Image 1: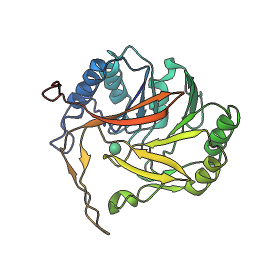
Image 2 (image 1 turned 120 degrees about the vertical axis):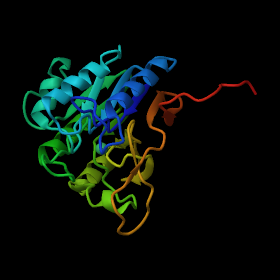
Image 3 (image 1 turned 60 degrees about the vertical axis):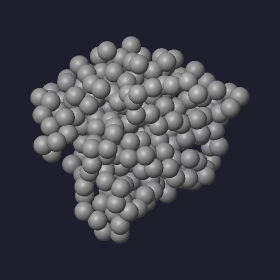
Image 4 (image 1 turned 90 degrees about the vertical axis):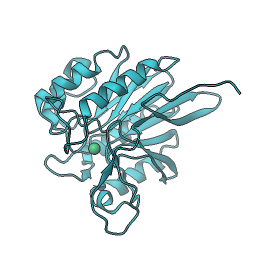
Length: 263
Ligand SMILES: [Fe+2]
């Protein structure tokens, strides 16, 4: 079982982002929610925007917040992250290369998980560099019979929220689709960035945007709306795989609700 959390936007001092989003406290609540899951997840994926400004002090705060998790944590950068600070922060985990984009490939049980770096430092939109696309192609070619999950921060499709669509994956999406089309073992493409759950079929593969464990982008499906967010309940995704039934993705709220009650 895999938990995906996204868009934590952790700060160095725990202040409320935009005056109303206590992102560090919310990340702590998400960690508590993961610890309450039964069975215990095998690993945690973080689909970008781990920090608010990509500063080393923020990654230190993040490490402290994630430290209660007993399972491995794998992450790709979002537009709010910074490559070298994140590489340093996750250096001891051993899944990131010493230089270049923060791509990774791991095998977890029967699954291959490929993380792709779509960060353009200082910009909000995403790009997949040729070496990142090559990393994906090689990772999938190397294990054609292993079901795969591919994660990046920026969605490669238009979701209908205008201000987020302007900063989606703007370069490399077509090539991403071409590569995915050639590797039918990919079961899911998973992203963050939009701060709300959205499902799309991309290159024939279900592509799921994760909600944020902090603030949510307002559901304003307009052609040219303002950037706005809400404090709708934070949530996360749980990906469950078994050989007989394939990959199922659940959305789970961070905060517990009354129940369960027996039918
Ligand atoms: Fe974000």
